[in-house]
Image (cartoon, rainbow, N blue to C red; front, side):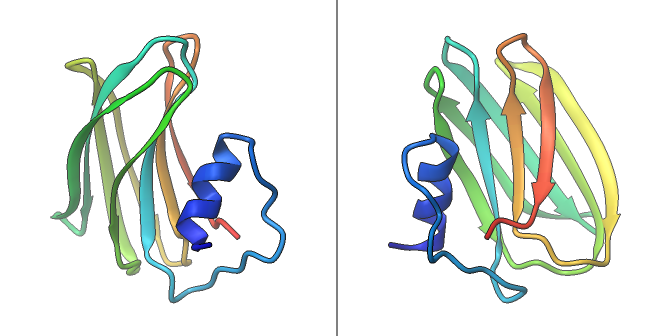
Length: 121
């Protein structure tokens, strides 16, 4: 089973991550995570040093997860913008010198939208 599949299943709470490993060679995987009880359309644009590296729109089922895309990790300045159901919902910029492989846009049950950046095992 691939690392990406294990992450997706872990987000859904249906499988433990025993035996899963990750490291600096892994690309960044970006997911749209919907914790709401209705589906949403999530459009995301991720730029690194002003160059777009992921741009995609997905419809995410209630309590669902959809992949937005992948890109190799590189140090630099990242900007993530997201629209949910056509409305501007997120605009975050950060600089990263340390490797990470997870950059997810999370729609909360209360309508909030957050960026989750981490190292997934």
